[in-house]
Length: 299
Image (cartoon, rainbow, N blue to C red):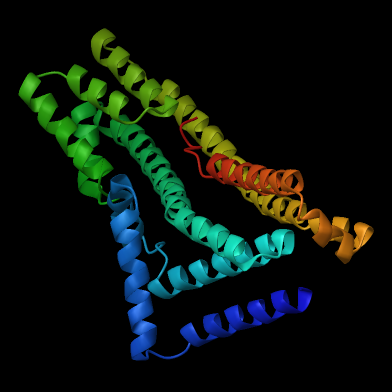
């Protein structure tokens, strides 16, 4: 049985190696089909976010998608076959795992997009404060940030909308409310509250307060980036641990002996228990992936 697993894995890696070679017609066809499947079955919001991720140059290439599918399929087939020694069951697990890949891609894109928004908001707040120290006028400050070229869409478009609202209403109240609702970050809300207070009370010397806010933003950003590195390290160890849990069945087979293990597979209760272990461990890993890719920069 183990020889069959090795043979299947060799075939799988052989197919994977073939797909990574040259632009043959078959190679191009498989890549196109993989991309079309992602486009058709992925959530609608994924397509919206994916456009920005592609613009940032962090979207997987079609070849990388094909490699991902092949690796996941080979791992799912190999692990499930090691548990059940049944090709049909392994094919079912392989299909289920491959169908989850678009969701994992969606989570990854959301994380990248979230990190991008946080960096843009950091740029927006920092540059607005510095512009305000020069102009002493909030609208002029955000106009300076808008024209400086340091922002990208969608934050750039929203800042333009803020400027239009301010000139339309003759005050900054609605502009600040719009931005606070659109981007729920403490540094944005605190900066807007400070500008609102300065505007209403006509503070004479606000430079010291603004300098302190810049320092607070720097500390916050440092903490977020440190947390990002910690999460990356945790994620790497978590995946290794999850794969190790799958491999525990090999230890069970070694202790029981292959003949005894294959005999146990004839028992419905044992089969249900093994399926439960596989599904629980898969849920554990999937939940960990969701945690890692959550919006972590909302403070």
